Length: 156
Image 1: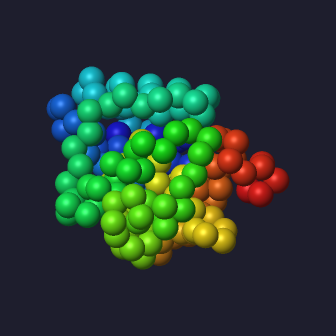
Image 2: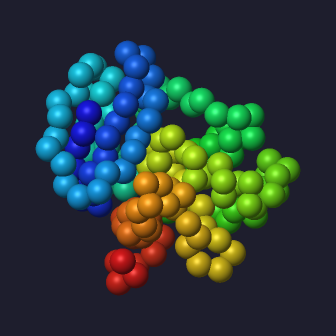
């Protein structure tokens, strides 16, 4: 399913019973209809989040990753709306290193739902979406952080 949201376009991939992947797309896209009930629910929840930053996602997820990546993603999932954690904070929480946490953040298969945009550097916003496809996705991170009231709209 492809859809346009206020910060940009995304593609969502799901099995019949779990959300598998969410990818950011460049530019606006021709939207495609959800192919199953889970994708319809995902679409509704993403629209709800776009309208209300305090919306809490409640979707079944399938996370495929290393043991380390799973630890990072689970720690990120616990960060509440309106809060951030530093790479160092997560590293200390799971007994890792900030660089390894950053690597796992960049491989997060479900950004927004697993809010890796809430992870910031010790000085500044840090990275976002690991520059996938050679695209600078930082404007999306800034939009998400402003939407949640973490940074001001003027910092977009």
